[in-house]
Amino acid sequence: MIIKASQRGGGRQLADHLLNSRDNEHVSVHEVSGFMSETVHGALNEAYAMSKGTQCQKYLFSVSLNPPEGEKVNTPTFEDAANRIEANLGLEGQPRVMVFHEKEGRRHAHVTWSRIDGQEMKALRQDYYKNRLMDIAKELYLENGWKMPQGFVEKELRNPLNFDLAEWQQAKRQGTDPRMIKVGLQQCWQQSDSKAAFQNALKERGYQLAKGDRRGYVAVDYQGEVYSLSKWMGVKTKALKERLGDHDNLPSAKETKANIDRSLSQRTDEFVRKSNQYYERKLAPLLRRKTHMQAQHSTMRETLYRKQEERNQSETRERQDRLYTGMRGLWQRITGKQKAIVHQNEVEANQSYNRDQIEQDKLTQQQLNERQPLQQSIRQIEQQQKQDITQIKESVYSPKAAENTQQLKSQFQEQAAVRQEPTPSLNM
Image (cartoon, rainbow, N blue to C red):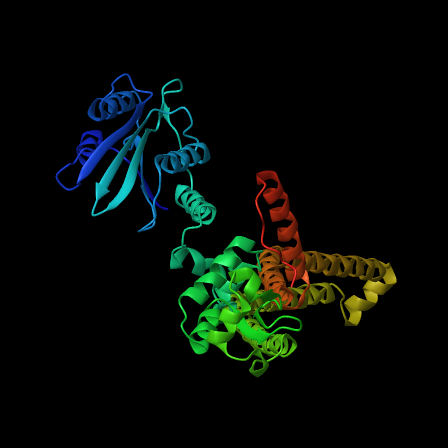
């Protein structure tokens, strides 16, 4: 059933809506539990009063349960849905109200819980409740054999060849519940009145119609898995032949797999190209920053080298000026001062060289410290690019799809054994 929910306040207005007999042909209060009051208005007023001891404004969790049109749904099924929601969203033990509405020949239910924990005096959280309710709704459709809404089916059974890159990466070749496969194939058959219509419906969900090796008609999915249509759809071969014609006119499963492989290969190449383009755009500002930084660092080094060279020339002149020429130079040699000056000049020249080298090393290290975080960012993007491309290719060419199918087969066989229910066979 379709489940809609919201966290809300306004208990009085909600009570008025729940008891609105003007817009509904019949209104039935089915349950008021956990409250001191036995009326809907009194119960929701209690919830409001309790919320005043907290800072919570949306102190109610309100859910509507809408079965498929034309289906006969008894009260225990509504109660089961409410109990599942309660358990899944951490509302067990919370006061609740359940009211049935009947309108235009259809019956639906409203269930409202107080979100306030009376012992802790705080509001209970329902994180990601929309996704959780979607899962519960899907389970109810499958377990009750109701025709699943198109929106529920298409999300998992759309043709992956129609995915864009983001959808493909999000899918990650997750295993599919065999019950969903069965529902999808059955819906393709139900909505088709000819071979062409059936083929188009299959294609929308990632299947190709083919001739089986041992069976007449099969569907081949994009992972190369082959499904017997008579088994999975529960349709006799005679009915298949009447609508689809002679299976000898269909390509074999082997030929179909080869065609799908070619299509997937082309699609994969396109994804790789788009992935490369995406990462090129993502890297572009970092590479521009790298180029700017490189030029900036080169300028700083050239400036340092120039200053050092100018200083060295000045210091060299000062040392040379210590050595006299002519008679004064001769006197320096005679007195032995020249030898001492030469030694001093050599020591100072060596000290100048070491000083310059230390300055250069210091600048180099500073620039390396500035450069390394940028390089780390570039490397992370390049590694992510490689990983994404690998995942794209593995999602097509690795044998994991078959492993997923086998794991799901074992899983659902175990679950069916516990519930003593039949499970769809995955043997082709």
